[in-house]
Length: 211
Image 1 (cartoon, rainbow, N blue to C red):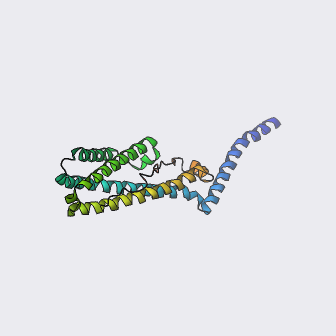
Image 2: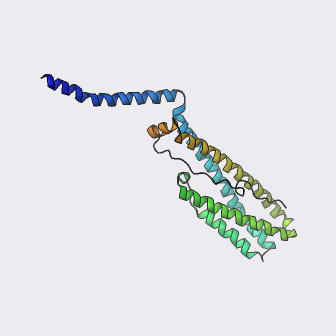
Image 3: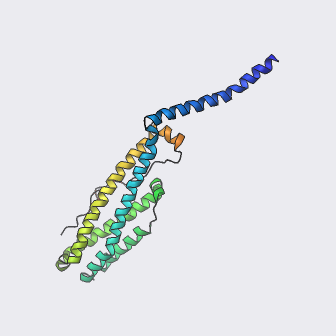
C-alpha cells in the first residue's frame, strides 16, 4: 500500500510541473503585457505593412503616369521607337508581378518585384535622357505637366522606400532579439522576418527629370 502512494505522488509530479510551467509563462506574459512589450511585435508588423502599402501605392502612381508620358513623347519622337517600346514593356512586366502582404516575407517574390521596378526605372531614365534631343517636346505643356508629376512621384517613391526600410528594420530587430523573439514564438508564431529593399545609389535617389 505504501509503495502505491509513492507511485501516485511521483506520477503527479510531471502534471504539476506542466501546470507550474504554464503559470510561469502566464506570469511572464502578464508582466510583459503590463510594460507594453507583448504588443510590440504586432504593432511593428502593422507599421511595416502600412509602409509596404505606401511603397506599392507610389509605384502604382508612377505606372499610371507612364502611358500618357509615352504617348506624348511618341508625338514628337516617333523615331525613338526602341526606347518607347522598352518603357512600355518594362511597365507591363512590373505590373504583371502580383504582390500582397505576404510578399514581404517571401524572398523570391520580393526580389522579383524589386527587380521589375528597377528595370522600369532604368527604362524610364533612358526615355527621359532621349527627350533632351527634342526642344519642342521639352516645351510642350502636357509634357511639362507629366514631368512635374513624375518628378514628384519619384520623390515619393524614394521617401516610401526609406520609410519601409526603417519600419522593417525595427520589426526584424524585434522578432530576432530577446524578449521579442520569445514573445513572437509564444504568442505570434506566424510572425516572420520581412524582406527589404537593397539600398543602392541608383535606387535610393530619384532620377533627375528636370530639363
